[in-house]
Length: 354
Image 1: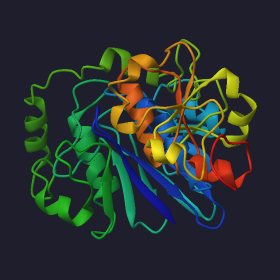
Image 2: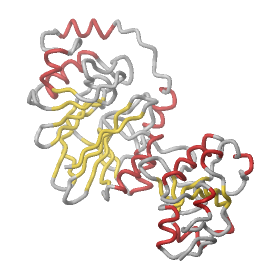
Image 3: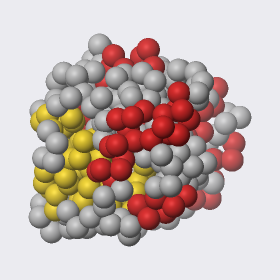
């Protein structure tokens, strides 16, 4: 099985990708709206077919990317039937199974943080994705969205602590940089929910947390009740060219497209002068602005026409797209494979040598 743990630093949210090796079918648990491009890029780079996005609950601290990924990759949206959300393709009931290839996740009801929380347990009970029901040495709050401390206490005991001690717990968030725990560890060491702690103690603890409401709550909950579908049309692609977004966070354009649209873009070559005029030559019409001077010379580049950055292999020019983005350029892409690929595909060059 393929497994990746991804992180959104703004909301401290973990997103989990699981895929069956042979079939390449995949599921994505708790995707974040702002990270949709990243997640789609990873799915595509690994050659996967995203079958479902799964929500552990209706989130209050971030907006889900479920709708965006459905539009981009054709995935289906799945979440608890008790969530109250509209627009899902599959409403899960307790102990329903979500299959991807020959693997499956069991949806266990773990209400208490919200009324519609689900924990997803892998078929061999080696992994459980608990959302906000159980954190590493903690748990989610219980004071809004139908939350209830007694319900959460019993959910964890009956649905999560009933799993083998060896089962790894992957939470919805962590605010200290921790990545995973186990059922056995949390039974012993969780300061709120350890087996030695009684229900009344837990209820008293949760009743007096006194936490402020999440900053994004007024935006996130209404959006997530629509499975992340925005009020306005949103796209994962800027649209001025058939761009590819890499898992490294770089927009790329393919050589064949650039060769056909040379006059429609600004081509900025960020190599040094000796390379620009060296054996590989340069793309016709390209302007030389070495990477080390790019930020200082950004004013020489028009902001009204798309920019394609170029170097020998695509590495320096990828960094150039980041630098230009920081100075306010919105339509910037890297030439995939750089001059090496351009030359290998035998497109016209200026300068250079055969």
